[in-house]
Length: 235
Image 1: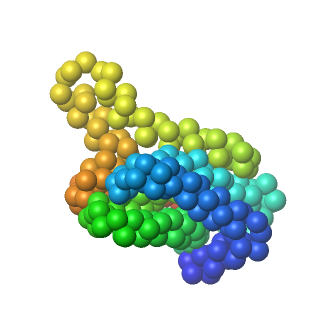
Image 2: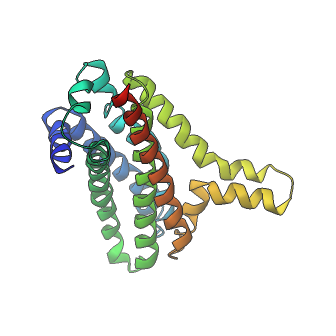
């Protein structure tokens, strides 16, 4: 797994995608932070992290689209499948590499919040809650991206497919608003909504149920990715 992780991290920085991702993410975060806090004279960082959640829904699929698709397109997939490494280690290595890139960009962009310290109104619990929530959501986004990338050799199709699934997971909570006022229906939609659970952290509260939910969804998509390659290896 470590060898796969190092190879993937190296590939991000030997090409342009790693640098481009970091530059675009940090630049966008700077613009969003300026408009939601500095220009509006507000120390509430919830709007900043919420908009970065939506931006990450577009950026992370671009980061993960080549994870497996590129190997299928260049016909190097068989080298990986026949290598003395388990499918789980391969998937885990790629996941950790992509997630490390996101976590790096996210942590650096979160440092913008320190600019609010002179105002004395920055709430540490709210900032940390939002940071943790976005890290957990990013984990889900990366796992979805890897799964979709394992299904196709077309990188554009992998990116578009990932964005579609992520937007669906985000929109589930909004769909519940238009349902009849039957309690259990709204409860189910809220329970599976990434965005609704994200909001639980924005007030600075640690929601253990949402943590378990994000970890479970990530595990499901990673398991599905492993199953895709298990089947491909033996066929």
